[in-house]
Image 1 (cartoon, rainbow, N blue to C red):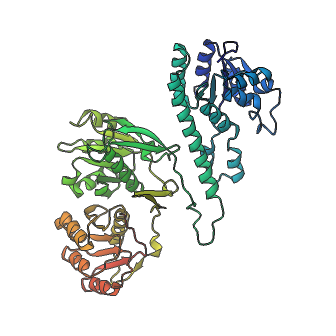
Image 2 (image 1 turned 90 degrees about the vertical axis):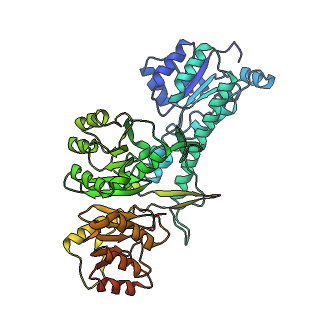
Length: 527
């Protein structure tokens, strides 16, 4: 840039976080500033001298600020190449002062559409036009202009400028970040506009013709599922408050790839219960789960469900962890990898981080429980060459739709356990069979190739405790053999979706064994 021009920065931002410190640092380096309405007023309040963009262009902002930066003197100052004769002549003729820096972020479109009941008109007003145009212009002309698009870049840019002009390599890095920002922004607008279109005949409006996903890398993980696999954690730009992506880590080692998977599974199942609940997760499946009048009692019951598998597990609670629960967690010969809960009482936190042998390592995560509105989103599963997209299986079943299909009705105690078991069952990998009693998971058969295999495993885990227990099955029993095995274990009631061509055979088997059975009419496969 020619030395005859002052060092000038164009500043136009929606998110003003950290801007005052950054701009004051630039002012100390001799920069002067051109800015637009809201940003100009903010900088003036901070004591920064600013040239209004209308004063520079000689043209006022019009249409309630919709048109303010779309002007040749603005984009000429961004796109101009002062060392090219033709550009230099235009700069001289039209009294353009080239920008050394463009500092710009965009209207909060994604935050706007995340609000409940946002209208189309409100969303459209948050579609930025001038901002992306300036960002793309500066990113294109990165050989001459530095484009700054986020608060996270401010300190690095200021430090680099204090040492001299930005290097070509740094300007290229800033350019790449700018194009990624505008690409993500455009994807968000495109996804939203597609979502509000009327559905074509035979099509579901929730699934647009084209889909893009905006994710930001938050963590480079030590490795993936196994040490030889590289891995990273990408998060949504605005993740729900009740999510692993937004959970706050209060203690412990760095989270691993497998920890994130297990914590997500733990959070989802604990969120499904209204009564105080404790969940023990191993390899995304519950090996222990219970509800009770107190959290400490729920933990004791959950841990006792399968104490061998519970060693090195992930725990979740749907209430703040209190001192009594923490004391039980810290008992000898218990090793917990991570805990996720809405909060930790001060005495409980102190115990968990000072008393057990694993005190420095246990990962304590603070996260509110999910609500149906927060999990009612789309679920994505990667397959070779594509992506499977579905609604999440988050809806709690309405028990008024359940149907008792056997001669014997379940007792009130059995009905409580059947309701508990049905919640747990939908969080277990298919084929899923669980045994439960007194609102406590006794044994789970998960991910087996046949429902009979899952029944064997669940009964084995439960052992003698299966007398008087209930069985929950995520899908129908295709044959009566599963019922016969349940009867041998002492099961007295079963809950399942029904829908098999052999339902009558299965019902007859239950009647022979005096087992009460409910059909829910809804399957809960979890592959």
